[in-house]
Structure formats: C-alpha cells, structure tokens
Image (cartoon, rainbow, N blue to C red; front, side):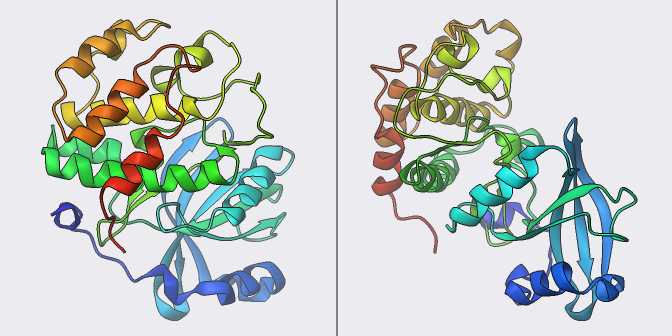
Length: 285
C-alpha cells in the first residue's frame, strides 16, 4: 500500500495543536524548547527546515522568508483558510521572532511535518508507480485541489515537489507561496514552475482555476513514468505532453482527467475534472 512506501517514523504533529503556536508567538523565553533541524529545501524567497520541539519530542516544519516579502504573510493567510486533510496543516506564523533564526527579519510559517517526503522524491526513488497507487495518490491530490478551488484559491504551482506524504500515506498539498485568491474573473498575473505550467500560463494569457487541472495531469505523468524525461522537449503549447499522455494507462476517471488536462484551451478544459476524480474514489480518512 501507499503507506508502506514511507518507512521513516516521527511523532504525530497533532500532539502540538494550538499550544505550540501560543508558545512560539508569545513567550520567547521558551525558544530553547525549539531547535532548528535539517534544512529540507531553499529557494530565492527563503528556506524550509524541520523544527524539533523538545518537551514532547515532536517535529514540525518552519518556512522562513524575508519579513519584507509579502509572500510569507499571504501564504500564512491562505493556509489558515485551507483546513483540509489533503492540505498541509497550518500551525501558525510569527514575524521578527528574535533568537529563533540567525536572521531576525524573518516571516516564519509553521506547518505540520510530513515524514514521507515529496511525490517527486517518491517517483525518483521507486520509478513508475502501479496504477492502483497512482489512482490513490491522484484522488487525494484532487480532493485537496477541490477544497482550494471551493475557497476560490488557485494553487498555480502544483507539482510533485509541492505534494508531501505523511507517515500513514496521506497525501497533502503544500507550498501556497504562488497561490492566489481569485474573484471569479480571469486572472492575468502569472506564476509557477515552467514545466508544470498550463499553456495559458506559459503564454501569459488570461487563466482560471483550470490551470491547476493541467498541472495535475503533469503530476500524473510524473508518477506513471517515474519522472519527466520528456520535459526537455516540451514547448509552450505542451505538444510533447500530449504524446506522453497517450502512453499513460490508468482508471477511466483518471483517464478523463488526463483528457481534460491536456486541452490547450482553458475555456474548453473541464472545470470540474478534479471534483470528479475526488468523488470517484473514497480517499483515506
């Protein structure tokens, strides 16, 4: 089963709850209880690290960003709204927390720690996954995506590296740094990672929430192929993607999403593809 693919162990973050945040935000004297662990990743806007909470030996994740960068504040706000089992749990945020990091001008966003790593790491380590595994993973991703879209939030950077797995095999969408709250109109600002971008994103034309449907289709290719060897050849129209999808065999509901996802014109791309996938299979509790 999917859960058996994540052998590493950790204590559940649920032991912390709101108490963890109350201490972090209001009592710097207790900072000795929180020790920064290994860095999980870094980008131009900041870094992500594991945090060890000594009183109950729990692990959480902290994303630290320059305080002057509004992305941290925005991401914290979006995560707080998105309370869902398939979206990484928001634990709180803090500004300018003296003594916690070397840089005192930081926006810190605290999230649950998913010890199974990312889907990108999973695909690279195991190679192509079986159909039943891809279906289970995709249904969970789609369930989280439906929740975001119901909140009028577009993720805009959905990819294997931004989807993590908990110890029990529960898939969670993370990194809402590029996400945007929309008002129902077509959007014009563009963001994301090129090889997962929809054609409308690449061409910098108006788009809507179906841009995430395209990206989910590419995540499926990642899982079915054990990576993305065709990415070097892909152009802005996604033509090599269409060829790659022809070789992907999976359940009818997933196949329908791939059919919708590979439609270059977002106006003809189905807006409820993710919802159909999420409803088609019961996801783990």
